[in-house]
Amino acid sequence: MAASRRLLVFFTALAVSLTVAASFSATDSDGSSTDANNAIGRLGIPIPRRNSTGPMVTDLSVCGPAELPPHALPPFQCCPPPSPVPPIDFKFPDSSEPLRVRRRMHKVSAEFLANFTRAIELMKALPKDDPRSFYQQANIHCAYCTGAYKQLGHPELNIQVHNTWFFQPLHRGYLYFFERILGKLIGDPAFAVPFWNWDAPEGMPMPSMFSNRDSTLFDPLRNPSHSPPRYLDMHFDGVDVNRTAEEQVELNLRTMYRQLITNAPLPSLFHGQPYRPGDKPNPGAGSLEVYPHNHVHYWCGDLRRPNNENMGVYYSAGRDPILYPHHSNIDRMWEVWRALDPNRHVDFSDPDWLDASFLFYDEDARLVRMRVRDVLDSSKLRYTYENVHLQWVNAKPTVTPGLSRQRRAAAKALEAVRFPVSLQRAVTAEVRRPRVARSRLAKAVEEEVLVVEGIEFDGTELVKFDVYINAPEYHKVGRGGRELAGSYMSLKHVGHRHHGTFETSLRLALNELLEDLDADGDETVAVTLVPKQGKVRIGGLRIEYLLE
Image: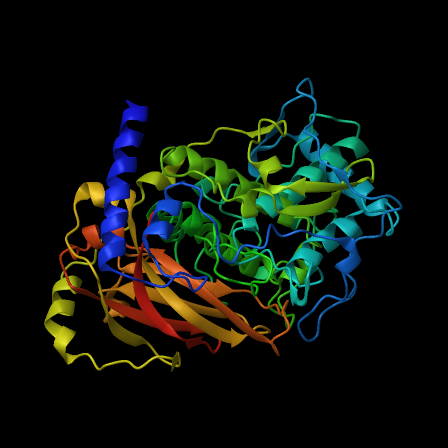
């Protein structure tokens, strides 16, 4: 049945894509048009990429000074120590190795906690020039996230893994070696980094062991107001909102549904936008990176510091031990996303993604080159996750009664918006939908996507804005209501050489959302952009149709 369904979907998608190519042209993030070749390519038929110059490759010879925000804290050098020999290619661990099981941090035993704490203590005790030391492990995150590495063949361009399709695989490789180093330090080949289970109600408070001031897991550069039992706020805007625990849980669960289900039907919407040699950094983040990844970082960071160190800014995030359980859960979400819809939630087959490579030091202090294709199967890496009930899969946001009807009545009264605009106040624009009332089968293979393009701001500032659909009176929308299509949020960082200007885009899926709002037959949608923090310029809004 599954094979038959895939065949039916394939040929239906092929017919749809050819029809689209004949009748509609949009612009992709790389500047190419959405024509028949592109549509077929998205279905998995290999075609040449006109702008492909091969995969991204990391090299120690082009690692230099990081580009840090003002008032950064030392150390200012992020590059790893040099290796006396060239890097070796990654090899999978032997299948006879114990399967490491990553468990919920708030449920670990006293024995495990003692082992975890001891492992971090031993890592921190290693000499700073030892690539396995906590000092150097923290610098790995800094180097890949602040532009310390330059692109081979393009020395004017930095490598920035955030806001790209490398966000998940890079952090998986990072955590893989971090975990193996800890295991070797305590002589436990089955040791696994636990995960902060912030997607479940009982796991939303910061795990209590991280608030123990006498523990090596404690970091003084955290928000002191967010110690347990306070619940994580996945919509944190820099100010704590007075919500009950039940209200905060509801908002967080709805956020998880929106980001892992509504906004993540396709690989590029989940992982992020393609990023190849010669491309400028930050083409566009995936749904999981914006929420809850960035918001957890911000919520943990110390707002008393100019850059919200340590967790609240990329260059210093690795200095806080809580980063690793946080990213263990981020990595777990990759596995969860795949399992939610095995037919559509698949990874890229693009060789520029699969063959991109990054450098890490392993548990024996050997420099290793790991490719994206090496991290795709966690079973081959000999780790798995404790099975946990996903309460958020049933937490679909609710529609605000009457709001859509009011929007249609007020549509003619909306003022025309001329882009680009500086988002100093809420702005509502009508965006034309090239096709309306599509068939259910067409929607099953093609996602309608709102593109917020030309997002520009000062990279040293934290920026956030919300995006609502058919809700000019957005203040009437309840906690995480259905009309909230998503948000854009970026932590403070520079990491590129454009005089501090940060340029990116945001993509939000519309298929399910428009059905829920009873707007699938409308010729336009009202898009409301609401500034929350920082100064940002928006280049424009458009709708595209994706087949992947």
